[in-house]
Amino acid sequence: MLESVTMTKILDGRAMSRNIEKTLLRKVSNLALRPKLVIMQVGNKEESNTYIRHKITFAKRIGVAVWHKKYDEAVREESIVSDIKKYNRDNSMQGIIVQLPLPKRLSASRVLEVIQPDKDVDGLTSASVNALLRNESGFVSGATRAVMAILDREKVKVAGKKVVIVGRSTLVGIPTALALVNRNATVTICHEYTKNLAEETKRADILITAVGKPKLITKNHVAPRQIIIDIGITVVDGNRVTGDVDYDKVKDKVKAITPVPGGVGPITIACLFENLIEACAKKF
Amino acid sequence: MLESVTMTKILDGRAMSRNIEKTLLRKVSNLALRPKLVIMQVGNKEESNTYIRHKITFAKRIGVAVWHKKYDEAVREESIVSDIKKYNRDNSMQGIIVQLPLPKRLSASRVLEVIQPDKDVDGLTSASVNALLRNESGFVSGATRAVMAILDREKVKVAGKKVVIVGRSTLVGIPTALALVNRNATVTICHEYTKNLAEETKRADILITAVGKPKLITKNHVAPRQIIIDIGITVVDGNRVTGDVDYDKVKDKVKAITPVPGGVGPITIACLFENLIEACAKKF
Image (cartoon, rainbow over all chains, first blue to last red):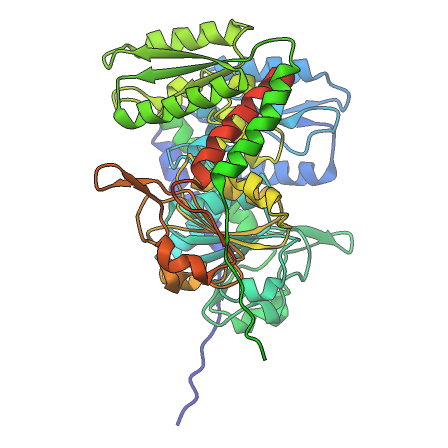
């Protein structure tokens, strides 16, 4: 008798991102206008620089113009707000991103709130979040949209599936939980207060982590039927990027898994531009 | 050997409501102003009339003035919006309620959005919901606040507890889930697509239902350690009110339970007025 060998499917984010890129390139070339995105950055944080560079590179490849507006660390909140208002009115600009985190001195929620919902391609305004909560149409963040893209691509029937989300951040964990409830999944939200995390995570059909704590999810936290989507990003040893999952030990124990790097990250950027291209067409 | 007999604790919402009433009465008498709440009602729905009557009765008992503004079924949305704007500016008015549901012709979300967050005592504007999502201070609905009040009163340490919420309505299920995540519970959201509901609900330390489906939760859905909070309200046989839980069969199988009627309902109304009295003091 032959032993049945099941291979774990490695969910290749770079390949998925390239696929989305192709579609977007075609869509952009069919547009009457050249889409334009403004990325507003305060200060010169190295991590932010890296993220922005990735966005600009992707934008170039699909024919989107990016206006990278850099502010001095000491900029007044009113200057940023007044610029956002200007970009809201500017019809040549379809998307507005405020690169987070902002210096503590500034109120991110006050600043973000000024962005017009139909240009809020990061899905961070109250209006966008509220639309998500009400299961109405609106922008969701690239990371949340990336999770949906992975599940769609894998043809996962999300309705009725058990989803466990580890991490309850305002930017990723909670919006992703809401988006999956909207897709009719049974969703459990776990975090640092969860007792016996492994007991919760092992019940999942789809396990999503968005914490930023390397090796939080070990082989004892997973089960063979699972799809693991790792949104965690931590820089270790100065320059190496790692997720929340102890990837090498987990990868042969599950059905499918996203690596880090090369998993959710590249898809997130592609999904941001999916939002932008939708912003060119529809108004919420 | 004596068999250990444990009595289920019936969580008496009327008694809790009376306690809150006493505290509010004292608070109101210490205020320099007489608090005023406006309740805006479109049409003449019998259920709405009943709810509003309960609110007015409670208000009278604690010395709060209620301005019940009734609109014809055919009222224009702009009239309501313009009145809300007037009430926003009126400093003698601390709370604004738009009684739901509105006729389908009108957009509830557009109308509600006009309410100033610091007068949004029902916790329904984007700003209030967003504050909840960000775990920042803001008003939450009477029903969500009632759940917290019950857990506080029972001295339940919510952090790390397993909470299962059945029902994902925008008005009750989802906000209550978010509020409990903010209190550090591990929260699972179930709904009509959940497979094997009983398997999920039995895992809960705290089981909350907000569906509006009588006898959805049977004795096979519960476990002895559980606190059951039933927010469901359905009118059966023309005039009898019932919850989501098959109360008679469940009540001896759990640690504590709210009956319907006389459970969450009366506390919800008291909590609405807790919001109003806070609106007299603080601005968000």
